[in-house]
Image (cartoon, rainbow, N blue to C red; front, top):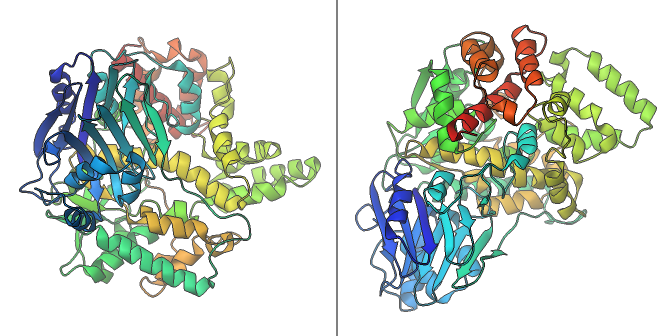
Length: 622
C-alpha cells in the first residue's frame, strides 16, 4: 500500500512530483522514489508489505523506458510473474509492482487492468510511446484523482492534496457540489469540492497521449442478470459456493511479509472472516476492537470477545476517550474535503492503534452491499410495493408509521418518516431520503435557491440498471454510490493516515460477481437479510452471532454535541468568523444547533456534516 502522484508537463519541472509524493508519506513511510521521463515524472511513497528487499521505487521495465508507480496489492502477481518470464521478460524484483510495468509493454491498458486481481491504483509512464496511463481497481478501493488543464498540463495523486501540490492547479471551490454533499455526506464521483479536480471512476483506465486530451475507458462494471436469469443452483448449493469463494478471498489476502491481523467487531461479517482466517492461518489470528468507555455510545467489545474466544485469536481491545475537536480537524486534512460520515472518527482511532501491532488488517467491509444486509434494501422493496397503493392508503399508512414508537421501527423512525414523505416519488428518489445526512426540510432552508440534491446522480445509476430485479438495482446503486464514495474512502484515508493497509475479502471480484448473480430471494426475504451468506456460515458461527442485529460503526454524536463538543459546536457553527454563511443561509444553521441542544430534535449527523464543511471552508479560506 502506498501513495502515488505525478505530473505530465511541457516543460517538465521534476521537483513537482517529489513535492507531491512528499505530502503522501503517511501512506508509505518506508521508502520514496520518482521515475522521470522527458515529459512526465511519477512518484511513489511506499509502505513495504511484500518484497521487502527489492521492491523500493522507482520500478521500471528492463531498459528503463517504462516506469510504474503503484498503490495497492495484486493477489495474482505470482501467476503473472510466471507468465511474463515464460514470454521472455526479465523481472528483477519479487513483488507485484513490476508486473504492471511489463504487462504495459505489450498489452492494451484496459486489458492490463482486467488481468489484475486485487485493489490498485497505478500510473505508468511509457517514454517510447510518450504516454501516461492511470488505472483504478474495479470497485474503487484505491483512490486516484487528477486535473487536466489542457495539452501539457496534467497532475494526479492518491489524494487531492498531492494534485494541488502542482502549482499550476488552481485551488477553486466548486460550490455546486454543496447540495449533494448535504444529502449524502460526500461528493459523488467523479466530482470533488475543488473545481477541475476529479476522481478517475472505478473500473476505468485513463490514457494521455502527447498532444491529446485524456481519454477514459471502462474495463469492468458491477452488473446483475436480468430478471429471471442467473446461475442454476439450489439455495444450499449457492451457500456452499459463497463459502468457497469467501474462503479463497480470505486466503489470497493473507499473503504478507509483515505482521497481519483483522478488525473484529463481533458482527457477522468480521466474525465470518476471522473464522476463516483461523482455519487458514498456522498461528493465532491477531484481532483488534475499539470501544468508547461510554455505555450510551459505541462499544463492540463484548461481542468481539465472544468471537475471539471461540476461535482462539490473539485479541487486543482499545478503549479510548479522544480529543474529539482536535480529531475533527485532522480528519478533514486527511480527507482533503468535507466528509459527513462520523464513523470516520472510530475508524481513524482503530487504524492508529492497530498499526502499533500490525501493518496489514483484514476487514469485513462489503458484506452488507453484496448480500443485501442493510435495512434500506428491505425498505426500498417495501416502498416499491407501497407506491402501487392509492394515495389515500399511502397517507394513512404514513400516519400510522409516524405514530409508532421508535423502538418498534428499529430506532429508524426518522428514516422511515423521510422515506414515507417521498413514497410518491418512487425509487430511487425516496431511497435517497432514507440515506440522507441532512433532512430535506433543513436542506431546503439551507439552500433556498433550489437543487436536485444529488438525486440526479442516483437517477443516472438507477436508469443504467433497468431490466434487473429491484433488489439487485438497489445493490448496484449502493455499490456505485455509498460504497464508492463513503465507505471505501473512509477506510482508505483513516487507515492510510497511519500507514496501515486494509484488505476487504468481501470485495473480491469473483465473490462480488457471484453474489450479484444470485436470485434476490436468496439474499432477502421479507425482513430476513443476507440469507445465503448466513447459510454459508451456519456451521462456522453460533446462532447468536450469525443472527445478531446489525449495529453501525458509530459514535454517540447526539450526546457529544450536547456535552463534550457543545462549546466547539457553538463556536464553530454560530460564532464570529463562520464561513458557512457565505455558501448557505445562516439562520437555519443557528436554528439546527438550537433545536439539537434543546432536545427538540436529534440532528447529530446533520450537524457533523455542517461542522466538517465549516472546518474545510476555514482551512481553505473560502
